[in-house]
Image (cartoon, rainbow, N blue to C red; front, top):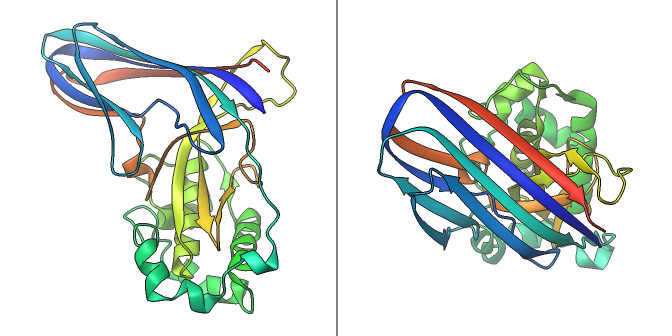
Length: 283
C-alpha cells in the first residue's frame, strides 16, 4: 500500500479579459477497489465561481463551475490524499475467456462502450493489416501481451510531436508520441481483435526511489485497461501493469472523455497555460 499526496495546479493567463466562462474539471481521483481517496479539495480562483459536482456517464467525479464575472486569469488547484493498493493478479488459464465467449452477444452487449473504435483509437489500415500476424494462434490474454510487446519494438515515447487531438493512426505514422498516444494505439489494436479496452487517465509518481516525505514533480499520465475474463491494466509508456505509484482519475473511450479541464469562454483573446503536478509519498 502506498499513500500519496497530489497537488495539481492549472492556471490560465488570458491576453484579454474574459467576460464569462463555463468549465468542467476532472482532477479528483476515484475511489475504487484499488485505491481510496482519503481527502480531496478543489480550489478555484477567482473564488466567485458557482460550483457543482456530479458523476459523469463513465463514473468520473466532475466539478462544474461557471465564471459569470470579468476575469483575466483562472486557476484550479486540486489537492488529494489517496491510498493505492493495486494487486495485479497473474492470469490463470481457467480465468481467461475464449474467443467464442468474447464474440458472444452477451459479452458484446456488456462491453458495448469499450469495443467500437472511437475517434482517437482507430489505428488505421496499416496496423489493422499487421495485427493478425502478431496475434495468430493466441488466446485473448496472450493476444494483449503480444500487442504490447509488438508496440514496444515499434513506438518511441517522444514529447512535443503530438497533441491532444492526435489519433492512434497519426501517432503510428510517426512511430512516436506521448503516453496518451501509446494508450490510444494499444486500445485501438485490442479493439480490432474484439477485446474490450478503455482509456485511463490519472497521475504517476515518477521516482520509486524518492524518500518518504519528498515532494517530486509528478506527471499527468495515461494508460489502459482491457478485459479477458477480468479487467487488467497496462502502462505502454513504462511497459508494465499499473502499480501503486499510478493514481486513477478517470476512465473513458479515449482522451476526449477525460480531459482534466475543459470549458468554453467569451473573450480572452488567447491565453498562456501553466500546469504543475507535485506528488509526495507519505507512506
